[in-house]
Length: 375
Ligand SMILES: *[C@@H]1O[C@H](CO)[C@@H](O)[C@H](O)[C@H]1NC(C)=O
Ligand SMILES: *[C@@H]1O[C@H](CO)[C@@H](O)[C@H](O)[C@H]1NC(C)=O
Ligand SMILES: *[C@@H]1O[C@H](CO)[C@@H](O)[C@H](O)[C@H]1NC(C)=O
Ligand SMILES: *[C@@H]1O[C@H](CO)[C@@H](O)[C@H](O)[C@H]1NC(C)=O
Ligand SMILES: *[C@@H]1O[C@H](CO)[C@@H](O)[C@H](O)[C@H]1NC(C)=O
Ligand SMILES: *[C@@H]1O[C@H](CO)[C@@H](O)[C@H](O)[C@H]1NC(C)=O
Image 1 (tube, rainbow, N blue to C red):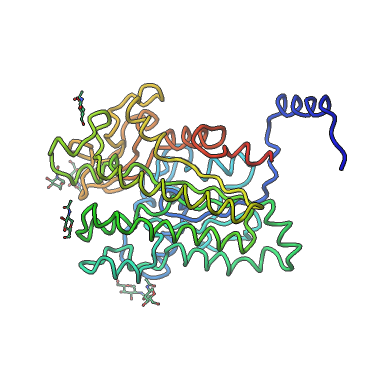
Image 2: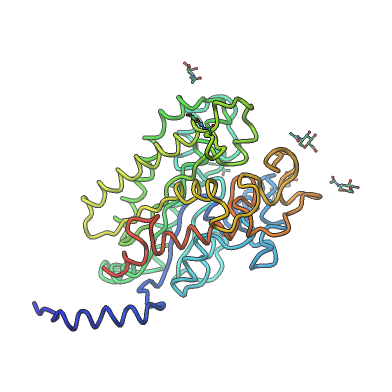
């Protein structure tokens, strides 16, 4: 093997530094997950099944920033997936269920409300009243099935597929939040929900294995957000002071659950890296950047009250389940970029953008997306 002389190597590095521009090798993005990643699948799914679910992302002021119209995204503007596509000089990742055009540059299989666990499994766990999302067949396994259904249109023989997927970037998550939320809605307490975290993480791990088996080589796997900071959960809690972390105002036991999920996910990823050394698996942390936003909002330009949502109405957190963003007479704040939360669960474009940059360049992705690409 020829060795590159150190001086030439430094010169190459120098070139990379003066030209850090868009020279990514990725030609396509495939993504899986829930409403943090969905770019239109829920709307299509609801229509195709004739379900009587009102999807607020079709309503103003969703999409008001950047798109200037509702854009099938649960935010005022772009999601992390959109920033990723822009960074790779690729088009925004098309919702797969919309079946518009060809998907050679990628497809998004994420559906808002999707769970990691299958609806049948969730129904066994939550015997009481099955929440609406458990009735939808959009869980991670269904998303994988859609990917396998699409695959023959992307490549054929092994060699061709290897070449194609070597230049594909996979995003698996965030997913899991809806599993836990469903369990809470169905009356399980945090101790009981803790018990199911390994099952949720196993399901995510199996999805990663499945994708690597299908040809995935680079995967980004985001963990869970600090659930105890979500205005929806905060609004449903009592005022018991001991529930709250006095540095953030978030509910401690929900955040502990998120940290538990993330620690198991990271452990699973480390095992998968050993098992599949030819794959690059990036762990992306949603938890730490979001906690930092809440602790030090001014540092990031979030000059509003951190846990109050931009688009909502009433109550301590400007959030009320009967007056949701997208409903008549519910308006958005004047400047969403000063807010962390857009609605009760989802972030503003401004918050997504900062998190994206921390995944791209570090420190909140292991390894940062940029570095994963260079090796
Ligand atoms: C869709 O559902 C509505 C009522 O929910 C019903 O009136 C209509 O016939 C259904 N359409 C189809 C195509 O099933
Ligand atoms: C989901 O799948 C189950 C089992 O195949 C089926 O009974 C149910 O009607 C499906 N739900 C929807 C919304 O398609
Ligand atoms: C959670 O529920 C279980 C089963 O009902 C019960 O034994 C346990 O004490 C509860 N834990 C908390 C913290 O409420
Ligand atoms: C915050 O709570 C911790 C215990 O959870 C306590 O030790 C500390 O004094 C509290 N700080 C403030 C500023 O209330
Ligand atoms: C939420 O909105 C409904 C309908 O406007 C109202 O009746 C209720 O009091 C509100 N709840 C809170 C906590 O503000
Ligand atoms: C919206 O607000 C207007 C004026 O306050 C009121 O007349 C109308 O009934 C409200 N609409 C809804 C759906 O609450």
